[in-house]
Image (cartoon, rainbow over all chains, first blue to last red; front, side):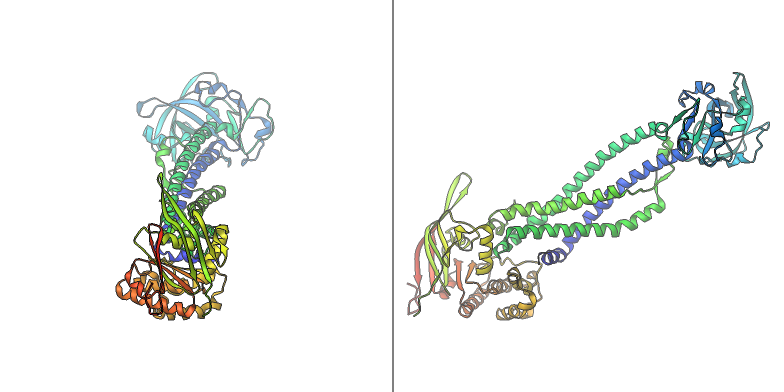
Length: 389
Length: 238
């Protein structure tokens, strides 16, 4: 009987119940959207870094540090035989050297990044280099990213002087031609980077068969003369940044949940406040206090369940639509975050369930609390609407 | 003439409220009996303790001192749940502001006390409709309280109070919000139903018109009973 009364009370409140439910549903949508968008951002950042650079880890020449270009020339090694024979989907040989580009008579320090052709482990847009022979032609083909091209004002087909040093310290210079301006999803591999075939870079710098690291799809066991760097180690700066971001997001989320709580508390409390006389009438008609509390708590629960259904009804189409267009974050890409121009939502069941549980629990709690207080007082106060003021 | 049994007996009942730091005595050692089938009023100016008296008899509030007995059972010895059950089974309330459940229709408001008593709707539909008919609201049976006039709302409240066949109906200023025409109709209706159902009616009122209908009048002033008059063989209160 209590359920029937609660249900009747709930749906016959009409617009008041609907607005209450709608506000809660919108709050749920906003919370899930925010959490999932943040997840999407983090997931894309780490995913992009993994697929373009990190793979499942690197076997690196000991002591190599990407932030110390002056030592790059000393930190190369011949490809270890245990890795050289791996299928092309499981490893990618990479040689890093420093150089200087002279676009439009300006000096531009660059990272020369030679990548093994035909590898499928890393997704780097070097198709423009595939057709060239292993022996570098007189004008060496290179690829640059869109940001790099923009910064140096280079276009596809432009030739430019590239200066570098070989393994004996001899400075050499060659003319290079930009065969492609590639859209690189990881801005860290775009700005200041000139991409070459690894065999060309080896020839130019006289480092036949050498690499700086071999990216692999996972740990292949210890390799003599090399250090294995896990993906976590390779992404430590990004992960630290994301960890701080997550902490900030948690603070923001807490504030949002707090405001949500206040909003729900306010609307539910007002609802009960306006129904004090009704509570007093139920008491006068002989309903026990605990049944009244159960009735109103059940009404709060129905509102919460209604909010979940309405949230799903409005939220799912909204999320599907959003997934088709994404959120423009090109400004973050400019700031060298490894994200594309758009990010998308990534839903995590645990977080969705947590948000739903929080909102439902809050609605039930704020339906229960004031009614429990009113029902605990004498009925005459409730009948006069003065149980809670 | 068979002796009428008392439904309610008040024995030196006092009620003191604390207002801020001071005590306010709303009722002062009131002693009163209400017999079966009585049709009586408690009259007196505002603040004389009429509503407090009805609330105490209805078990909505507890006295500070003294005893109230309903058919020999002391209300002061009842738990909150037992008091709720006492109200559910024995008392019908009629309020000045009707206190109908706003989302329910006339029919559902009258039905509600029976559902609380554990009846199924199908069992009591006829009884509810019969009462709705008796109070003259059959055409409005599906309407909500917001669609009714004050007089119609009070009729619903009367039907709701009577539907469970209570021993005692407590009506707090039932005509205070009604115009003269509606007050007259409501009082006529209550008197007819009193005769028909044999439930005792106890009003609180300061409406002079009520005096014509009642068989007994108790006057309260400052929480004390000033007189207790009964209608004699000549139809006069003495």
